[in-house]
Length: 165
Image (cartoon, rainbow, N blue to C red; front, side):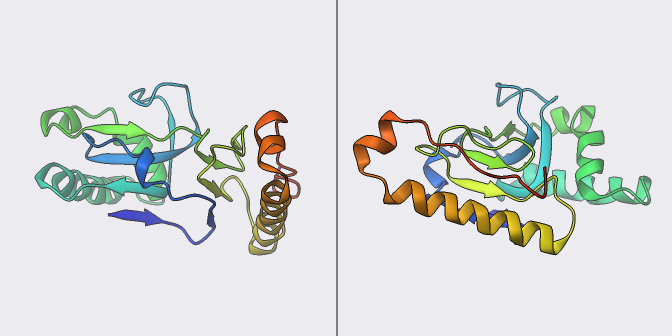
């Protein structure tokens, strides 16, 4: 099951980049170059989950943990519980998605030849998100209009985040 917020653009189909042996995969605000590193900063706006006993137990645990931390957003609660011994006890396999493929305004993908998604994370306000997501679409259109050899040989960069940055 792929879950996502409404403020995510898809440039390529991302399914080939999910880890086949993993129960719970989640995008990051900041990625520390190791998909297993629990110190990555998860962003609940985009995740891929296998429905099984482990993930069902995990979601119940996460839901109950929200009640133990009133006023905290689900992403903050996830950050608090990802190191909990219960997660290891149930055998949940967690991996974090590389921002090189699953970028966002917190940490944009560096190479448009590989990016799958762009998330308007680290951005407050609907108008700001719409402005910068529109710029990202324009960047993508310019990139795709280039001849294939130029797309591969010259690194293309995002003009976003602009307002959200």
